[in-house]
Image (cartoon, rainbow, N blue to C red; front, side, top):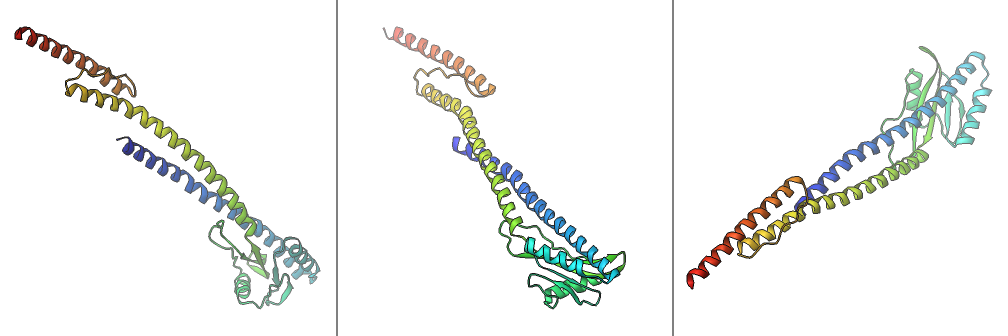
Length: 247
């Protein structure tokens, strides 16, 4: 019985811990992914603003200098083009002629923003592509494509997941210890009661069952002790009567 009770309690612990840990893991991954998207979206907005100014003034030096400085600082390449898809600046080895980049540029020149979908995971590798049109309202003055590395975000997700899993493991161990103690608290009085019932059935004076466990078990043990005392007294009287009669 003890094994069955412990198995049931441990199954409940596993389900409860998983119901807490899994959503938390998914939330931490989604939250870090959203942070990456927001940060790179802000960068795209800045370069789109530079490109819009360059289209109005005819001076592309500012957007070119900022793009090269950005790639040198963060290691993430950029492509900025005008409305005819002619490259204004290309950094980090990424080119407007690349098929994947070209598709994003076409979408941006149609005034469509392109952001990657799907949350990152600890095992995510490589990069994600972002694209945004330059201009205001429905007027498009160019396009910006950015290739962002996900390695730093994936490493941070790994650290967050490790912390969550470590905390979950501690909770699981604590719950397991509590479950074993609770099982012992409930089952031990039943074992003593079962042993006393066996002694009484064999005609032996049963040992007094110590009260323990939940109130219901303590009440049952007290009732059994009273019954055992009555039965033992009746058996003793019967033995004396038989002994007197035989003499």
